[in-house]
Structure formats: structure tokens, C-alpha cells
Length: 414
Image (tube, rainbow, N blue to C red; front, side):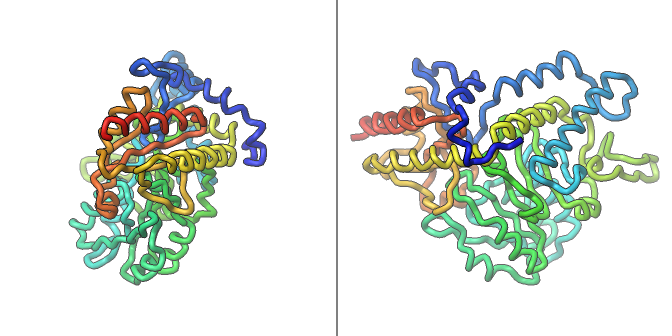
């Protein structure tokens, strides 16, 4: 049962930190400070152990097997689907599609829904802060269908210009696909308002939840988006696995994205009929161990409580912003009023990669570069940022090490 954010003081986050053995190591002669959680979170020991148990005691292919191991693997594999349904409060477990991650899920929707429904002159609305994974698939489909990409601009503070968004909506709008939390800026977008406005215009919506699912409680029915996508490795699970949520009536009208085993009903050389949702979108032997690993990660996060995680990270990011503000010459990129646990910054006279390299020599892991979000970098007229991204297992000492490390890095350029 989830704990309330009101009980956060009763949660021993120092004890929780010990669940992540990777954090207990030295890098370049210094204790590791891991602040690259927006790229990939770390995995708790129990998730790794659950995957190991599957491989060493339960491994078999799923579906259609009558022997005990196959049935056991199938039960665990499908139980994960049910667990994920409840985690995001989807209406039906068959609305949960297994994919290889957020990128794969967006490509599935773009190619299956988009190619079938977009006509020449139809419009797809994205935002200026999108990850490349939520830009390129729509461009590829637009090239094939004649659809047109429209872009919601971003303000100087790193927030979506909602008035501009309202003006972009029209009867031509067929899809609105936006990021929930910007991986480059940390901005938390008002997705409920975005979805409601899109629906009023008759459009379908997709929300990229890769950066929101690890950091806050998601109620997909309340959000009312038509599609929602996320990745396992951002939320303490294994890499190479993710989820597409889709409203069942939309999924049932979509053709398969890939062909092969398990997605079929009957096959002849003259004709093939397809399996029901969700299986028609899950061709081939699936990532069984990864689904079981994500299931265990969902249990782990739920036991801490997503409300408590959100509150813990809000405290950490507030502390980080306040401490980083004290560093001369440091400039934040993205200062939205509603921000998550991402802090991006630059120095006008120091390249972000130089900052990241010097921090790494001190055992501090941050991400530098354009963060697969080149359009937003161009919006702010910069080539790259240094990005520190926090998780609930980070602490104030990690932030202090970061600020000390940045001050040390500055000495090389003064």
C-alpha cells in the first residue's frame, strides 16, 4: 500500500539508499555521486535478484506451453501486466502493451495509428522541448502521409506557451504528442490541460511519460490521455523494456506494427488474421525477464510510495537549486515554476563537457550534451548543458559534493 507524502519524515531514505549496491563504490578514487538518473535510474538489489531467480529457476518461453515451467513463466509475465495496469490506474490490463521502451512505443503509435489515420494537410502538434524520440517518428510519418508538424513554443523560463498552444489547435489537428516532464529542463508540463484542450479540438493525445513515471503518481484515467509511454530503466527496472498504454478502443482499431509469432490468430499463405489486443502488438519471443524485473520495481516503488518519492525529490531539487545559485557564473537553463528533479546549467566561458569531465574525475556522474533535445538547445542558443538529475536515493551530501565539484572545476578556467 502506498504511503502518503505526509508520512515522508517516517521513511528512512538512508536505509533505502543501501538497497542500491552500485552506489557503494569508488569512482576515480572518490565515493560515487550518481546524478544521472534522468538518463537511467539505478536498480535496487531485490529487482536484480528477482531477475536472477527467473533466469536460474523459472526460465521458459511464455504462452502456448503446457509444461509447468512455461506456465510458471507465463503467469509471472502476465501478472506484470496486471501490476502495471494498477500502478498507473489503467481501466483494463489489455491496455498495457509491452515494448522495448519509450522510443519503440512512440514509433508503434506513429506507424500504426498515424499511418492509418493521417491525411495530407492533417496536423501533428509537438512542443519545442521534445526529446528526439517524440519528434523523429512523427516526422517520418508526416513525410509518408503529407501531415504537417506544428510546434508549441517555449518561454524564456522553460515553460510551454499555453496561449500559443491554444492558437495552434484547429479542426486539422489530429494528434498532440508532448512530453510530461522535460528531460532537458525539468519542466513539468500541464498535461491534463493539454489533453483536455486537444480533445475539445477532436485530436488524439500521446504523453511521453519517461521522466514522469519515476517521480510522481500517475493516474491515467484522470489524465485521460489516449496514449502514454514510458521506459522500465528510468524507474529502477531493467533496460530494453517499456510500456505503451493505449485506450482499448483505439488499440483495437490499429493494425499490427510488426509481424511474427504470437501476434497472429490464423496464418495461411493467402491470408493472416491477427490476435487480440495487446498481443497483436507483441510479435516474437518477448522480454520475459525484463517484464518480471519491472514488476518487481513497481512493487518496490509502491512500497515506498510515489507521493513520498515526489515529496523527497522536491526537497532535494529545491536544496540543489538554492546551493547552485550561489556559484558565480552558473546559469540555469529552465526555471519553470513547476519543475521536477532535473537541474540543467551552463557557464558562458566553460563548455558543459569540460565541467562533466572534471566532475567525473571527482567521482560525480552528471550528463552533458544536448540530451537528445537539440531543438530546445537551439531555443536557448546553447550547444549543450550540464545536467544533474536526482532520485529519491540521493541525499544532501550528494548535492554538496556536486557544488564543491563545480567550484573546483571553475578553478581550471579562472
